Image (cartoon, rainbow, N blue to C red; front, side, top):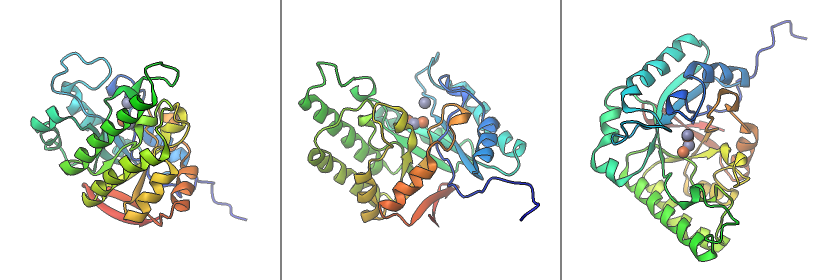
Length: 275
Ligand code: ZN
Ligand code: FE
Ligand code: FE
Ligand code: ZN
Protein backbone atom coordinates (compact mmCIF):
# COMPACT_ATOMS: atom_id res chain seq x y z
CA UNK A 1 0.00 0.00 0.00
CA UNK A 2 1.33 3.42 -0.89
CA UNK A 3 2.00 6.04 1.75
CA UNK A 4 2.22 8.80 -0.86
CA UNK A 5 -0.38 11.56 -0.47
CA UNK A 6 -3.27 10.91 -2.82
CA UNK A 7 -3.13 13.07 -5.90
CA UNK A 8 -5.76 12.98 -8.63
CA UNK A 9 -4.69 11.04 -11.71
CA UNK A 10 -3.85 13.30 -14.65
CA UNK A 11 -5.59 10.93 -17.02
CA UNK A 12 -8.22 13.20 -18.53
CA UNK A 13 -7.48 15.19 -21.68
CA UNK A 14 -7.06 18.97 -21.53
CA UNK A 15 -10.22 21.08 -21.33
CA UNK A 16 -9.71 23.47 -24.21
CA UNK A 17 -12.95 25.47 -24.05
CA UNK A 18 -13.46 27.73 -21.04
CA UNK A 19 -14.72 31.26 -20.43
CA UNK A 20 -14.04 34.00 -17.86
CA UNK A 21 -15.96 36.78 -16.13
CA UNK A 22 -14.63 39.21 -18.72
CA UNK A 23 -17.30 38.02 -21.19
CA UNK A 24 -19.97 39.23 -18.76
CA UNK A 25 -21.99 36.03 -18.86
CA UNK A 26 -19.52 33.75 -17.06
CA UNK A 27 -17.92 33.73 -13.62
CA UNK A 28 -14.36 33.11 -12.49
CA UNK A 29 -10.91 34.03 -13.67
CA UNK A 30 -8.41 31.85 -15.50
CA UNK A 31 -6.66 30.97 -12.20
CA UNK A 32 -9.97 29.72 -10.76
CA UNK A 33 -10.45 27.45 -13.79
CA UNK A 34 -6.86 26.21 -13.49
CA UNK A 35 -7.36 25.32 -9.82
CA UNK A 36 -10.64 23.56 -10.60
CA UNK A 37 -8.88 21.67 -13.39
CA UNK A 38 -6.19 20.37 -11.06
CA UNK A 39 -8.87 19.17 -8.67
CA UNK A 40 -10.63 17.39 -11.53
CA UNK A 41 -7.42 15.59 -12.49
CA UNK A 42 -6.42 17.68 -15.52
CA UNK A 43 -2.95 19.07 -16.09
CA UNK A 44 -3.84 21.43 -18.96
CA UNK A 45 -6.62 23.86 -19.85
CA UNK A 46 -7.07 26.49 -22.49
CA UNK A 47 -8.78 29.80 -21.81
CA UNK A 48 -10.90 30.50 -24.87
CA UNK A 49 -13.01 33.49 -24.03
CA UNK A 50 -15.35 34.97 -26.63
CA UNK A 51 -13.69 37.32 -29.06
CA UNK A 52 -14.49 41.02 -28.40
CA UNK A 53 -16.27 42.70 -31.31
CA UNK A 54 -14.94 45.93 -32.81
CA UNK A 55 -18.44 47.39 -33.23
CA UNK A 56 -19.56 46.84 -29.65
CA UNK A 57 -18.55 49.89 -27.61
CA UNK A 58 -20.84 49.07 -24.65
CA UNK A 59 -21.06 45.29 -24.66
CA UNK A 60 -23.42 43.68 -22.16
CA UNK A 61 -22.80 39.99 -22.82
CA UNK A 62 -19.24 39.84 -24.10
CA UNK A 63 -15.73 41.11 -23.54
CA UNK A 64 -15.13 44.77 -24.30
CA UNK A 65 -12.36 45.37 -26.80
CA UNK A 66 -10.54 47.48 -24.19
CA UNK A 67 -10.52 44.49 -21.79
CA UNK A 68 -8.59 42.34 -24.24
CA UNK A 69 -5.14 43.25 -22.81
CA UNK A 70 -6.46 42.40 -19.34
CA UNK A 71 -7.61 39.03 -20.66
CA UNK A 72 -4.10 38.28 -21.94
CA UNK A 73 -2.63 39.36 -18.60
CA UNK A 74 -5.05 37.20 -16.59
CA UNK A 75 -4.30 34.10 -18.64
CA UNK A 76 -0.55 34.51 -18.23
CA UNK A 77 -0.94 35.25 -14.52
CA UNK A 78 -2.95 32.04 -14.03
CA UNK A 79 -0.11 29.95 -15.41
CA UNK A 80 2.21 31.48 -12.82
CA UNK A 81 -0.33 31.35 -9.98
CA UNK A 82 -1.33 27.72 -10.37
CA UNK A 83 1.76 25.60 -10.74
CA UNK A 84 0.99 22.15 -12.06
CA UNK A 85 -1.64 23.29 -14.49
CA UNK A 86 -0.60 24.42 -17.91
CA UNK A 87 -2.82 27.31 -19.02
CA UNK A 88 -2.95 27.76 -22.76
CA UNK A 89 -3.93 31.05 -24.36
CA UNK A 90 -6.88 30.72 -26.67
CA UNK A 91 -9.87 32.45 -28.09
CA UNK A 92 -13.34 31.43 -29.26
CA UNK A 93 -13.85 33.44 -32.41
CA UNK A 94 -17.21 34.01 -34.07
CA UNK A 95 -16.95 33.43 -37.79
CA UNK A 96 -18.71 36.48 -39.24
CA UNK A 97 -18.11 37.76 -42.78
CA UNK A 98 -17.91 41.37 -41.57
CA UNK A 99 -15.19 40.50 -39.04
CA UNK A 100 -13.29 38.50 -41.63
CA UNK A 101 -13.41 41.49 -43.99
CA UNK A 102 -11.95 43.69 -41.25
CA UNK A 103 -9.17 41.15 -40.51
CA UNK A 104 -10.30 41.60 -36.92
CA UNK A 105 -9.01 38.23 -35.67
CA UNK A 106 -5.56 38.78 -37.16
CA UNK A 107 -5.26 42.09 -35.33
CA UNK A 108 -6.10 40.51 -31.98
CA UNK A 109 -3.88 37.48 -32.51
CA UNK A 110 -0.95 39.76 -33.33
CA UNK A 111 -1.00 40.99 -29.72
CA UNK A 112 0.29 37.75 -28.14
CA UNK A 113 1.37 34.15 -28.74
CA UNK A 114 -1.82 32.15 -28.97
CA UNK A 115 -2.04 28.38 -28.60
CA UNK A 116 -5.51 27.69 -29.96
CA UNK A 117 -8.32 29.47 -31.77
CA UNK A 118 -11.76 27.88 -31.81
CA UNK A 119 -14.06 28.85 -34.66
CA UNK A 120 -17.77 29.17 -33.88
CA UNK A 121 -20.99 30.00 -35.67
CA UNK A 122 -23.30 31.39 -33.00
CA UNK A 123 -25.87 33.32 -34.99
CA UNK A 124 -29.07 31.70 -36.15
CA UNK A 125 -32.63 31.07 -34.94
CA UNK A 126 -31.43 27.84 -33.26
CA UNK A 127 -30.14 29.93 -30.38
CA UNK A 128 -33.57 30.51 -28.82
CA UNK A 129 -36.19 28.82 -30.98
CA UNK A 130 -38.00 26.20 -28.89
CA UNK A 131 -39.47 22.95 -30.21
CA UNK A 132 -42.99 24.01 -29.18
CA UNK A 133 -42.81 27.26 -31.16
CA UNK A 134 -45.25 27.16 -34.12
CA UNK A 135 -42.50 28.72 -36.26
CA UNK A 136 -40.42 25.57 -35.80
CA UNK A 137 -41.92 23.69 -38.77
CA UNK A 138 -39.95 20.78 -40.26
CA UNK A 139 -39.11 22.91 -43.31
CA UNK A 140 -37.91 25.80 -41.15
CA UNK A 141 -35.77 23.54 -38.99
CA UNK A 142 -34.16 21.91 -42.00
CA UNK A 143 -33.44 25.29 -43.56
CA UNK A 144 -32.00 26.60 -40.27
CA UNK A 145 -29.59 23.64 -40.13
CA UNK A 146 -28.67 23.95 -43.80
CA UNK A 147 -27.81 27.64 -43.40
CA UNK A 148 -25.70 26.87 -40.34
CA UNK A 149 -23.68 24.15 -42.06
CA UNK A 150 -23.11 26.38 -45.08
CA UNK A 151 -21.60 28.95 -42.70
CA UNK A 152 -19.58 26.22 -41.06
CA UNK A 153 -18.16 25.16 -44.42
CA UNK A 154 -17.21 28.77 -45.02
CA UNK A 155 -15.57 28.85 -41.57
CA UNK A 156 -13.41 25.85 -42.51
CA UNK A 157 -12.59 27.26 -45.94
CA UNK A 158 -11.40 30.53 -44.35
CA UNK A 159 -8.44 28.69 -42.75
CA UNK A 160 -8.61 31.17 -39.85
CA UNK A 161 -9.25 28.75 -36.99
CA UNK A 162 -7.65 25.64 -35.50
CA UNK A 163 -10.71 23.74 -34.36
CA UNK A 164 -14.48 23.82 -34.71
CA UNK A 165 -16.46 24.49 -31.53
CA UNK A 166 -19.82 22.74 -30.89
CA UNK A 167 -20.15 21.61 -34.50
CA UNK A 168 -23.83 20.60 -34.41
CA UNK A 169 -24.99 23.62 -32.39
CA UNK A 170 -28.36 23.93 -34.21
CA UNK A 171 -29.61 21.04 -32.04
CA UNK A 172 -29.13 23.32 -29.01
CA UNK A 173 -32.84 23.50 -28.16
CA UNK A 174 -33.62 20.01 -29.39
CA UNK A 175 -34.69 20.85 -32.97
CA UNK A 176 -33.32 18.36 -35.50
CA UNK A 177 -34.16 17.53 -39.12
CA UNK A 178 -34.40 13.84 -40.11
CA UNK A 179 -31.09 11.89 -39.88
CA UNK A 180 -30.76 11.59 -43.68
CA UNK A 181 -31.00 15.38 -44.06
CA UNK A 182 -28.43 15.88 -41.29
CA UNK A 183 -26.07 13.50 -43.09
CA UNK A 184 -26.49 15.39 -46.38
CA UNK A 185 -25.53 18.72 -44.82
CA UNK A 186 -22.89 17.57 -42.34
CA UNK A 187 -20.75 15.44 -44.66
CA UNK A 188 -19.74 18.28 -47.03
CA UNK A 189 -18.92 20.46 -44.01
CA UNK A 190 -16.77 17.68 -42.54
CA UNK A 191 -14.98 17.27 -45.86
CA UNK A 192 -14.13 20.99 -45.72
CA UNK A 193 -12.95 20.63 -42.11
CA UNK A 194 -10.73 17.68 -43.06
CA UNK A 195 -9.37 19.57 -46.05
CA UNK A 196 -8.51 22.50 -43.75
CA UNK A 197 -6.62 20.19 -41.37
CA UNK A 198 -8.74 21.29 -38.43
CA UNK A 199 -9.82 19.43 -35.33
CA UNK A 200 -13.38 19.30 -33.97
CA UNK A 201 -14.20 19.46 -30.29
CA UNK A 202 -16.44 17.25 -28.26
CA UNK A 203 -18.26 19.95 -26.33
CA UNK A 204 -20.00 18.50 -23.30
CA UNK A 205 -22.17 21.58 -22.66
CA UNK A 206 -24.82 20.08 -24.96
CA UNK A 207 -25.74 17.79 -22.08
CA UNK A 208 -27.00 20.87 -20.21
CA UNK A 209 -28.98 22.18 -23.19
CA UNK A 210 -32.20 21.06 -24.86
CA UNK A 211 -29.95 19.04 -27.16
CA UNK A 212 -29.55 16.53 -24.29
CA UNK A 213 -26.38 15.16 -25.83
CA UNK A 214 -22.84 16.31 -26.42
CA UNK A 215 -21.84 18.27 -29.46
CA UNK A 216 -21.05 16.29 -31.66
CA UNK A 217 -23.51 13.43 -32.09
CA UNK A 218 -22.21 9.84 -32.21
CA UNK A 219 -22.79 9.83 -36.00
CA UNK A 220 -20.67 12.92 -36.53
CA UNK A 221 -17.94 11.50 -34.29
CA UNK A 222 -17.85 8.41 -36.48
CA UNK A 223 -17.80 10.42 -39.74
CA UNK A 224 -14.88 12.42 -38.29
CA UNK A 225 -12.94 9.24 -37.47
CA UNK A 226 -13.53 8.02 -41.04
CA UNK A 227 -12.02 11.25 -42.36
CA UNK A 228 -9.12 11.40 -39.93
CA UNK A 229 -10.47 14.54 -38.24
CA UNK A 230 -9.08 14.54 -34.69
CA UNK A 231 -11.12 15.34 -31.59
CA UNK A 232 -10.35 17.63 -28.72
CA UNK A 233 -12.34 18.10 -25.56
CA UNK A 234 -14.11 21.15 -24.20
CA UNK A 235 -16.57 21.72 -21.36
CA UNK A 236 -17.43 25.24 -22.54
CA UNK A 237 -17.40 25.98 -18.80
CA UNK A 238 -18.87 29.34 -17.87
CA UNK A 239 -18.12 28.73 -14.18
CA UNK A 240 -15.06 26.98 -12.72
CA UNK A 241 -16.97 24.05 -11.27
CA UNK A 242 -18.05 22.95 -14.76
CA UNK A 243 -14.49 22.27 -15.87
CA UNK A 244 -14.09 18.82 -17.47
CA UNK A 245 -17.80 18.13 -17.09
CA UNK A 246 -18.59 14.60 -18.38
CA UNK A 247 -15.07 14.14 -19.75
CA UNK A 248 -14.88 10.39 -18.99
CA UNK A 249 -18.07 9.93 -21.03
CA UNK A 250 -16.70 12.14 -23.80
CA UNK A 251 -13.49 10.12 -24.02
CA UNK A 252 -15.52 6.90 -24.09
CA UNK A 253 -17.70 8.30 -26.90
CA UNK A 254 -14.65 9.25 -28.96
CA UNK A 255 -13.11 5.81 -28.54
CA UNK A 256 -16.41 4.09 -29.37
CA UNK A 257 -16.57 6.09 -32.61
CA UNK A 258 -13.14 4.83 -33.63
CA UNK A 259 -10.86 7.65 -32.47
CA UNK A 260 -7.46 6.45 -31.27
CA UNK A 261 -5.86 9.91 -31.00
CA UNK A 262 -6.78 13.38 -29.88
CA UNK A 263 -5.56 16.78 -31.01
CA UNK A 264 -3.46 19.00 -28.83
CA UNK A 265 -2.50 22.55 -29.78
CA UNK A 266 0.58 24.56 -28.79
CA UNK A 267 1.40 27.76 -30.56
CA UNK A 268 -1.49 26.95 -32.92
CA UNK A 269 0.25 23.80 -34.12
CA UNK A 270 -1.66 20.54 -34.03
CA UNK A 271 -0.09 17.50 -32.45
CA UNK A 272 -1.73 14.08 -32.23
CA UNK A 273 -1.66 12.37 -28.84
CA UNK A 274 -2.80 8.84 -28.08
CA UNK A 275 -6.29 8.73 -26.60
ZN1 ZN B 1 -20.35 32.12 -23.58
FE1 FE C 1 -19.73 29.03 -28.47
FE1 FE D 1 -17.72 28.90 -25.41
ZN1 ZN E 1 -18.85 28.07 -26.83
